[in-house]
Image 1 (cartoon, rainbow, N blue to C red):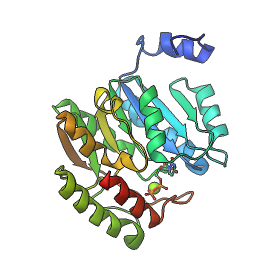
Image 2 (cartoon, protein in one colour):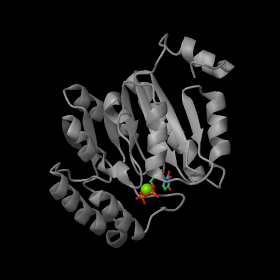
Image 3 (cartoon, rainbow, N blue to C red):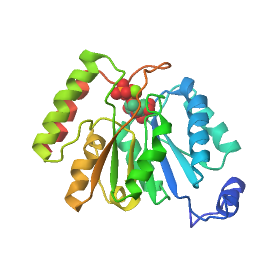
Image 4 (cartoon, rainbow, N blue to C red):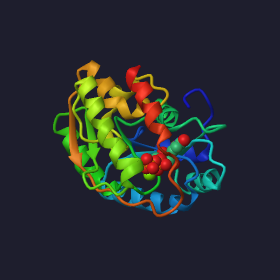
Length: 241
Ligand code: UDP
Ligand code: MG
C-alpha cells in the first residue's frame, strides 16, 4: 500500500476515517461461497462496530469462491472504504485465508470470525473489553453450539480435549473462529494446513495471556458447511506437527 498510488476510496480512508491514519481494529473474515450471507454479515458487523465507537476495517478474504461472493464484496468495497477485499485464485482453506488477512491487517487489535453468520458480532465489544483488561488473546467459547452432533460437536469435544492435553493450553473450544488478538501476537505466526485452530496453543510459546468468553452461536441459515468428518483427520495430523 505504501509504495503505490492510492485509489480515491483508499485516499478517503486514509484521510477522513475519523481523522485516523490506521484503524484500531481489523476484522478478518474468510469466505468460501458465502454470497447469500454477505449483505446481512456486512450489516451486522458495521452496526455493532459503529456502536462500539472505534475505528475499524473489515478484511474479507475470498478463498476462491465460485459463486457471487467476490462481486458482492466489490460492491461493498465501492460503497464503504473500511471494507477491504483479498481474493485467492483458488480455494486454499481457512488457515491460508486468515494468514492473508493477518498480513494485511493494520489495526492494533485483530478480530477473527466466520462469515456464515454463525458467530455473533454482538459478542465482540465484551471480548475487546476483556482483552484490554489484560490479555493478549480472547477466545470465544460456543457453550451452546448450534451444529450437528455427530459431524461437529462430538469430534470437536474430542479435539478440544486432545489439543488441551497435548499442548497444555486448556480451552473449551479451539474451533470457535470468533477470537480477539493483539496484532503483534498473530503477525509473527506462520500457519498452514488446519493450524488456525491451534493459534492459542502455538502463540502460548510467546508467553501470551489467554482467556475465554462464552459467546452466542447460531445455526447456519444460508449456504452450506464446507467441512465433513475428513477434516478431523487433517486436524489430527496438524496437531502432531
Ligand atoms: N471457509 C473458507 N475456506 C474454506 C472453507 C471455509 O474460507 O475452504 C470459511 C467459510 O466461508 C466460513 C468459515 O470459513 O466463513 C467456516 O466454514 P464453515 O461454516 O463451512 O465451517 P463449520 O462452521 O461448518 O465448521
Ligand atoms: Mg459455519
